[in-house]
Image (spheres, helix red, strand yellow):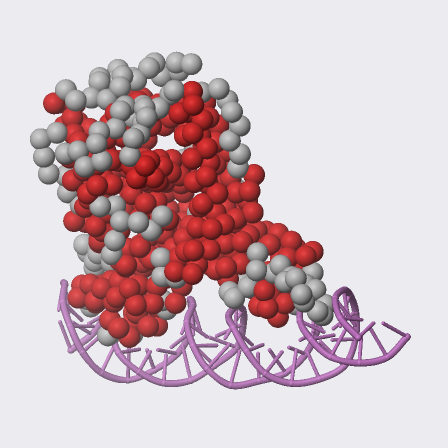
Length: 211
Length: 211
DNA sequence: GGTATTACGCTACGACTCGTAGCGAAAGCT
DNA sequence: AGCTTTCGCTACGAGTCGTAGCGTAATACC
């Protein structure tokens, strides 16, 4: 957040309640109106603040929505479920549940689209949304290495490459399934996905409802 | 295209040249302005047509951009490169090359974002962009089955599920790599990706520059 | 308690885009 | 020819944008 009050600062501090109200109002407007019809004036009205207050804190619609959507991903966790497959299935289901919410669906893709022409916006997305997710990949990978479920990777550069690859494969597949194919990433899909991710397409598939 | 002249139709026919000019102008505007700053008035001026002509053919910005972007994916092909791995690497590189173009980057994600709240738009995207890509997956899969590279799948329902899964994994990973991570899906990345897709994470990784 | 400094709510503003209506002219079919 | 549809052009009300200006509220420092 850029609204943190600097240490040696005088004058009236910014209202933290207003920040929360604005972000909540933004999410509500995303649900009801979607990205394209969301206006900052409307968000201000919903939040009970003046439009000028909104412009004093965020430079525009893009930055505001990034912050509003980023909060949705704060709940992502990676509890230890005993095996790499179970860990992956658990976090993917969490991720899918977030993407199933309309405020995430309509907001996330839109800001990513805008970020293709705005480096500062892309950095903001990376810092507040992407990097925390990638940390989960690192954590899960380290845990699996401890369990001996993954082969050792000698080259440290290759480790970085692999983590990036896994991240793009996991997040990309869930996002594509949810937003492009518009099908639910339910438990059955997540099981199939995890099996392919761990063992590949060339491995034989188990029965259709094999538990 | 909805502008096809019906069979038994009288009067002045619609200019096919105008269609092409408008779609080309739309892509040019996407490159120079991006999605959010693209206006239909500007596109009309670039194309050398009246703004009203544009509104007579497309109901809005979303539909126009879908058609303009869809043409970019017409060039996708799946030449037989001898093995499933080579086929995948080839088509993924093609896909990545298209996504590297700015008119695809800024346009595609934006219309997908809009489609989360517009069923008709999602159907349009599916028909003109997604389904043709999925056909490539079907083709490559059938080819691999003929070669004996993939295990047989007895349940026909499971086949459909697997094709959908592969499609989401391939397209999702490339899109996420290109647009979210903002890193190039180059030959090295595609090699790593294909290896994981076919053999899974649990398989040992070859050397960093192993051919 | 007084004062400086900043945030806030409110109003108003010019600039821009939207999507549509209406008109006369052009281009094809029978 | 006559009919039908498209095209280019102009104009329009409605809505949003982002900012400026003002008086007031809330905090830090003396």
